[in-house]
Length: 512
Image 1 (spheres, rainbow, N blue to C red):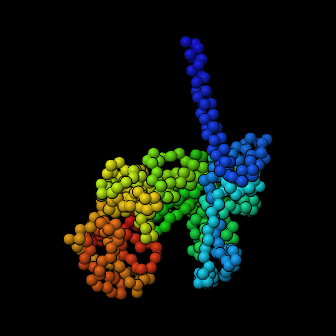
Image 2: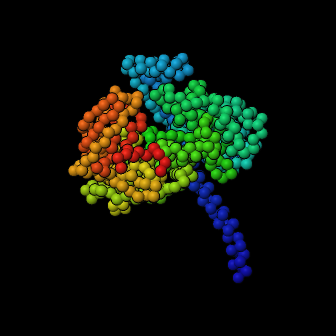
Image 3: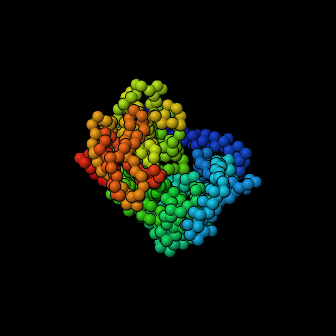
């Protein structure tokens, strides 16, 4: 009995050691796979590990970076010139936005085509770049606001040399020299304080600018230009934060209540993340914005890490081969951190038995800039599709992808309300209604078309108007219970889908 007691007394410690050994084995396996994938660049990466052979903590940081580098890439984008030359304009060379646009138009008229070449980090980044990045990250980690950050958090949110898919930047030292003295002089002592103070400073350094090159911006370009669209601002803002020793990460969404998507930041503080908009809203200010403005309320929010995240429940369904950013192993679903009320969307398929090769992997799609775009990945069991933790009061459609690369719609469009109740938009052509639609004030002279979603054709079909005026257009032939889309021919943003209810246009741009 005493032997058993002594054995079980040490069982928790033994179990902990076993877990550590298993984790170490997995890390070693990931590192070896990364080195094998590096090809001719393997010697450079092994040089980093050798460089830190006498510093176990920095070597652990190097192992973390190298093991996860196969997931990351960057792209060189430029205009191809005759004779194999490359040209990438600099926004700072143009005095006005109009001058820049005129130059880009002239390149298009001259037949200059944009080219894009993708490179894997693991096969291109050299030892000097990685050693410099690691040394500078450790230097920032010693600062008062950063020194209490645990090593695993440091590795994930301070150490990484990239935020997204931007070209690797060599500005980390310059950012440290410019911004760390500001934090030193203010005497900040926590990541949250440091992030708030530095974000106020960033508001004077960069701002949102619509004018941009037709390429993904580099850190250097955004810094020199003093602004960019949201992805460029996010990359630069978070790069500066990490250079200053502030643990930050990028969160993102694809809008369901307006077009395109958005990126912003979150700062780690005492085990929790606090969202902020780089150069704009401070930590604590951005979350209310997302929940109080109807058009900004997301249906799903994802966090982008440098290392892979645990596979969610939907990952148990065999992958169908359809390519979407939602399947990145680096993404974590953090919708619960942002939305105060989430629902599980359950919807029955309308024509599943007519389709051959139906997949168990399905996609919850929102209409975004002329396309149904996936916002969540779910699973199908028989005729029921399930999507977990979704923001309600949105219009969706469900699709699968039996042929990799193409979506096939399994349901009619539907409205999922705040409680998860589903209303499908299956038009009734035999019952019609009349309605007069206002035209946009800035587009009064354009030709407008009203479309309804034809479930059989799985496409929007146009309707003939009965009359048109300077500021309105009238219809008498609108099928009841139809999803509608009132558009001009130009590809402009936020021509939103909607439905009619009680003689009113119902869009998803309000909080209900």
